[in-house]
Length: 102
Image (tube, rainbow, N blue to C red; front, side, top):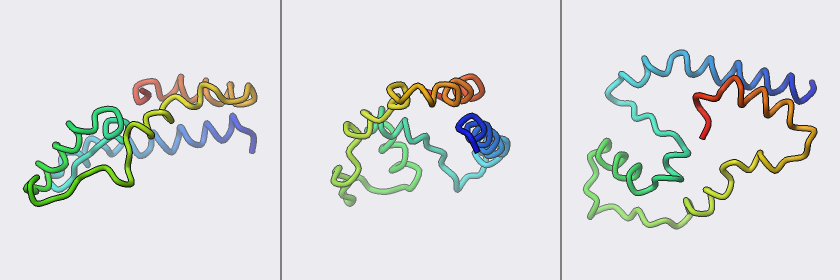
């Protein structure tokens, strides 16, 4: 399977998951967090998780030891520096998932 076909499969998979997302978000035991939000807005997103789980901040050690948002942020947009052979696949994903990209 070539890269463009793989990107088409990815887009189809991604959108099929999103089809049910709004219904899933309505469940009171589900908190939907975008990974990029955790990286780019760590403190706000962390507080959102703490509130959702009803955790006392003072009793939980949430210091960054293994997850380091500043390091992960360097990976956002990494695809823009890939070899030209990926361009058609990337363009396909960008066009079809533009509402979901950062």
